[in-house]
Image 1 (cartoon, rainbow, N blue to C red):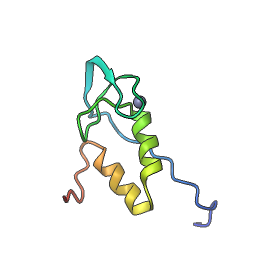
Image 2: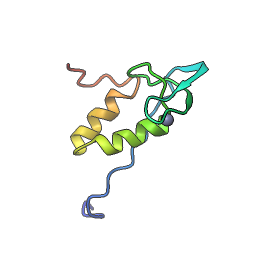
Image 3: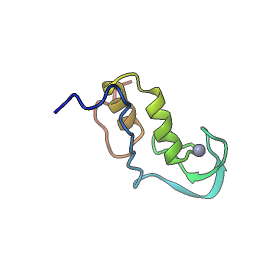
Image 4: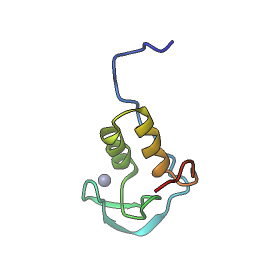
Amino acid sequence: MSNATSVAPARVVLDWRKGQVSSQPAPCVLCGRPALCRSPGKDVPCHKGCAEAWITCRARNRADLARLIAAHTPGTSQGAAS
Ligand SMILES: [Zn+2]
């Protein structure tokens, strides 16, 4: 049940239901287009889809992926070191 496909990156889906939404659009830190969403982790303007794509590209392995997802999801404070 584990040898599915080669090394296709896991699809990242962030839960930003607890994230902030501003009434003022500001340039997304990733794509530069106006965004109302604020990254829950850093409180910067950022599209959820952009953050998901960024994490997908950034993660070097599954542990890294899990760490990045946790770091950018509000309410998940597991292993909050450094
Ligand atoms: Zn964006």
